[in-house]
Image (tube, rainbow, N blue to C red; front, side, top):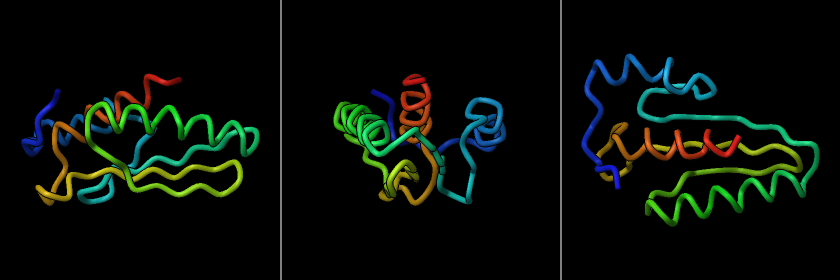
Length: 95
């Protein structure tokens, strides 16, 4: 399991390349997704919940019909960490 060590400056600079679907917003990684309908969005959220439980790292998220908004940061560290990077990569692997 990845640790919650803060990302280095070099690692932060690589985030846009490693996670092109995510927005780096200060100390938060954000991703917006749109699905065909509510059921598809909910099914995606169920798959993300499994990832969150496996790595014990849970996103802040919202759902409105066919849209899901994800935000992930390591609150206890107050910054982006290797745990956030691993979580985002795992979510991206769902596609």
